[in-house]
Length: 119
Image: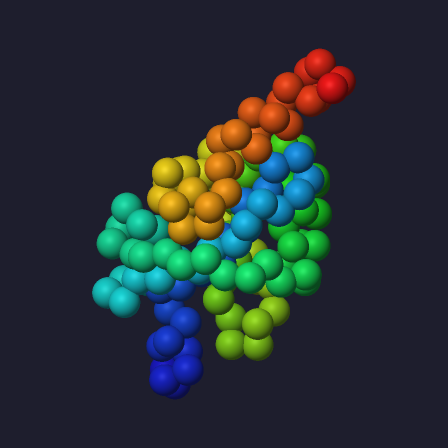
């Protein structure tokens, strides 16, 4: 395996989607495992939202009928969106808020209230 490929193993890009909009993106990494999950020993950092990933994440959420989810992409050498998994109930809300400054629980609650009460 090339050194470049080794650098990408154990990392992914997570996009949080609420109501068809991307709230933020983070990169998760684990130097000791191919699993990038925080609960598996990984770490996370905020990253800029890239348009091509944003478009794919919102499209995937729409196809699956998910108003709230995380769309995780493999961190690829060519920086092209490659779907890893989708989580209908993504965890680490408190950590995500500390990393990004975005309160995703509040954003989801506001979205629900808007949809239910047509506010």
